[in-house]
Amino acid sequence: MSHAQSKPDYNIVVDVDDDEPTLEFQDFATTNAQQGRMNVGGSSAPPPYQPPSSADAGNTTYSVWQVEYWAQFFNVDSRDVVQRTYLAVVPKDSFLDVYNANPDLWGTFWIPTSVIFAMFVTASLSQGIAEALAGSTHEYDFTMLTFAVFIIYAYVLVVGAIVYGATKYFGSHPGLMECFSVYGYSMAVWIPVSVLCVLPFNWFRWAMVAVGFASSGFFIMRSVNQIVSRSNGKLHQAIIPLLLVAHALLVVVFKFKFFSYSVSS
Image 1 (cartoon, rainbow, N blue to C red):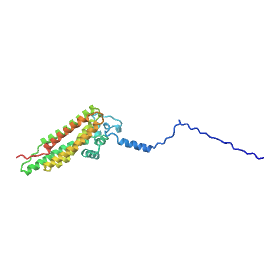
Image 2 (spheres, rainbow, N blue to C red):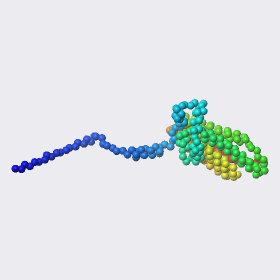
Image 3 (spheres, helix red, strand yellow):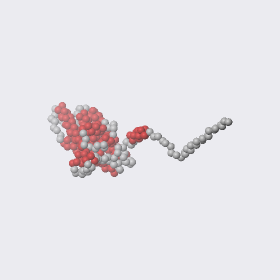
Image 4 (cartoon, rainbow, N blue to C red):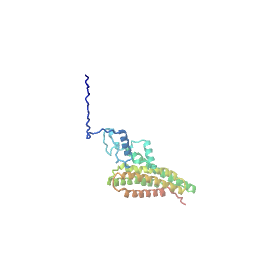
């Protein structure tokens, strides 16, 4: 007799708890790339000014009365100064983003000094040529050199200090050297303007002065606006027009004192 053997049926039940956390896979490369792009496209305001750090010198803190304190502001080479001068003359990129990475006083001091020399030499040359063509004897006017020293250094230092005080009062966290550098480097465009204004065409001189005003004025307004934008106030609505007026007055002085000449009869 044959016996039929049946295999038992097994029912396997898997209970999946919906409350259990599920695995999620994240593409960190994509996330990091997106975060990088967000940082790049962030606020146009540069970070608050930070003076040069002395961490590399063993965390030594120098007093303003020590030579080592001021030496750190001259830790730049000619390539750095040329790059910053270019950004001041052709302000298509942010000057302060480059400057605040390594603040310097080299260009801040030497550029206005070079402008003083250039304006005196070219103005004397223009006057000498005009008097020679008229058959007159030329005498150098050294009061023009004294005036150039006074007006240019006063503009850089006094207006720069006013910008620093005003922006600091309204919480923009400026740096005094940062404000001086904006006005010091803004003088760079007047070196080529001085040379070109030797040409004896009054309309051409007016055109060159207009170019110098537009270039340096835009550089100053843009840089100061970046400093002002660090605060949430409306300071720029008051200070920007005032600075533009002060700059326009300086340019008028330049035109009639250094870029005009007359032959005395």
